[in-house]
Image (tube, helix red, strand yellow):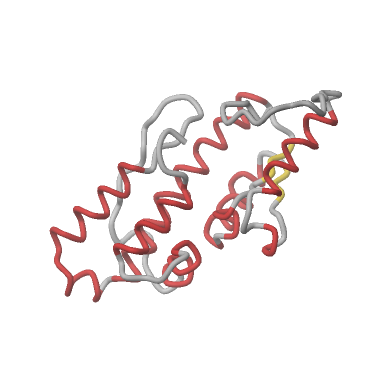
Length: 175
């Protein structure tokens, strides 16, 4: 991501909505009662395979400010569902783009947001028609070990190895 990760966006929007931390599971729970088409929050149009979630956070902030607290409380589930739909759409569209460009035969959807039920539903349905999609068991979604492990396995399967003296490099490409 160029700015906040998707999980951070969920947490920050949840805070705006008065939901407890961590916000991702709370938005997921609440969104099940709401209408994802209630409001169309903007989707980032950043090029390449990069993500940006700062714009949608700002959009939610302004939407809540412009409509007032009473409106927000009355439509809390709808706002949560609309926000969630926008984030899932952004994640899905970039992943589809990557699958097409790389001709990926399988995709591992990992990280904290991979626990989101709407993301799992849309990725399994739409992306599942193009390639095999894998999700970690819920208990392994809370940290990024599954993501790092999946990237390491792919590198290993291609015969790529790193020396034991490898240092931490936050800019290192995973694939």
